[in-house]
Image (cartoon, rainbow, N blue to C red):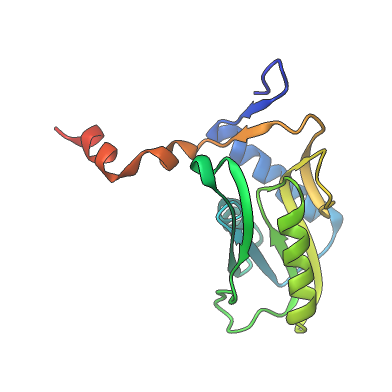
Length: 174
């Protein structure tokens, strides 16, 4: 649900999963066939996992991080992992790169450039996200929602960011 001021978008678990299914349909209806899904951790892990199950394709993971300050609300320096975790030894062929959103576009642009430069076995690379913000400098190949007002997206699992083991123990104490 988008707030009236357009600055915040609150997404329920049901809405989140429906959006991932719509993303799967966008990819499927394009007619493009791929060999592997590469998700960007952490944001792309949930969509990547679900797409991997729907398309029955192996899931590779690359860690990236830029939102660390202020409980994950302030973008910092971009860190990209040196290695990709994949069940097939080396990532190759046609790859669908998945993340949750194209915010500034910086992460996706940097990862795409890195993959095209350093991973020659990748013969074709396309990108898929749930949301693309208006300020994004990167245009993904597949996206479900375009958000011209650039709202902060409150995803349903973000409550875990501030939970911590002590609070969890307190919650489940009998």
